Amino acid sequence: MTDAASPAADLLVTAFTPTTDRGRALRTYGVVAALARHRPVDVLYKRFGATHPSEQYAQLTGVRLHEIAASKGVGRALVYARGRLAGVPRGEARGFSPELATAALKAARLPGRGRVIADGPTAAALLAGRGIGFIYLAHNVESSLRPMLPRFRHKYGSEPMLRRFERGLLLAARECWMASRLDVGLARELAPQAQLRYVPNVVDVSAIRPPNGRVTAPRALFLADYNYTPNLNALRFLVEQVMPRVWVSLPEAELLLAGHNLELSPETDSRVRPLGFVEQVRDAYALARCVVVPLLEGGGSPLKFVEALAHGLPVIATGRAAAGLDVVDGIHYRRAEGPEAFAQALIDVLGAGAKEIGWRGRQLAERAYSIEALAAILQPQRGGA
Picture 1 (cartoon, rainbow, N blue to C red):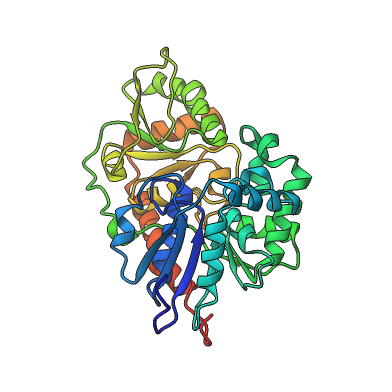
Picture 2 (picture 1 turned 120 degrees about the horizontal axis):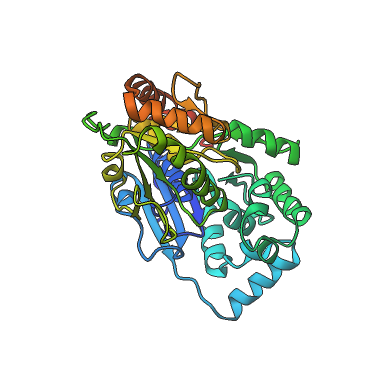
C-alpha cells in the first residue's frame, strides 16, 4: 500500500473486485469516481465476482487499486467463526478475509488518511468495532430487501437477526450513505440515532451519448440481473401480462431483454428477444425506442432507471421503481401501474414516441444523477473529512 499523498487520499474497502457490470458495482464506481474529483482514492479489494477490475477504473485519475490476496485456510475460518459469533449473518461472514481486514486497518491508520469508506455490509462488518471511524456505503436497506431473495434463511437466518445486524452497522458507522431518500427513511426507522446521508446512485452521464432518435421500430428494452427475484417477477409480468395486451394493438412490437442470468421458456413468443449479457450497454440502448422498469417489489433506486434517463430514452416504469428517484410522472418518465396501464403506455410510446420525456430525463440525469452532481455532494469538509 502506497503511503497517502497530499492532499490526503480517501480509502474505499470492498469485498468485491471493482467492476462496472452490475448495479452494485456501478454504485461503487460512481462513488469512487466522484471522490476522485477532489483527491486521490485508494481502493482496497479482494478478488471476488470477477477476475480483473473493469477498465473504467484505470481511466480514473488519482484512483489506485490494491488487490489483497485472500487465503482459504485456518485464518479465514477463524475470522468467519468470530463474525458468526458476533451476529454477522452467514451470507456476509463468508466474504470475510483476515488479509483484507489487516490491510484495511493498516491503510486506514496511515498518517494523513482521508475518509475511510466501507463498501457494503461485508466491508462494514470487517471494520466495525476496530477503532476506525468509517463511512458505510449502503447499497440497500438489506433487511427490507434480502427476505425476498432465494435462500434467505440459509444466508441470513431470520428477519429479526438481519435487522439487528444491519442496525449495528448503521450505528457503528460515523456516517451512512444511503442510495435513495426512501432508503434514508427505512434506515431511520431501523436506527433512529444513525447518521444518515442521501448519496444517490449515479452514472457517468458525460460519457453517454444519447441515441440520435433514428429508432422508429417499436422495440422496448428491459435491462436487469434476472437472478434478482424482483427483476424476475418483473420479467414475468412483462412477458405474461403486458406484452400480450400490447400485441393486440401493436403486433410488430418487440421486447428486448439484456442482462445476466436470463433464461426463457422455449414457448416464449419470438417477439421477446433475448440479447443476454451485453458488453457495451449502449449497443442495447441503440436498438430501442423506450426502456421499461416494471418493478413490482423491492426498494432502492434502480441504476438501470438512472442509466436509461442518461441515455435520453423515454422510460415507462411503475411507481415502485421510481420511488427512490426525484422523477415526476409525465415530465421525466411515464408511470404505469398494472398490466392494462403498462400495456397502454407502451402502445403510446412505441407508436408515437416520447422525445420530450426522454430529453427531460436526460437533463435530470445531468443535474442530479451524474458523477459531477455526486462530486458536489461529496466535497470534503475542512479538516479533511
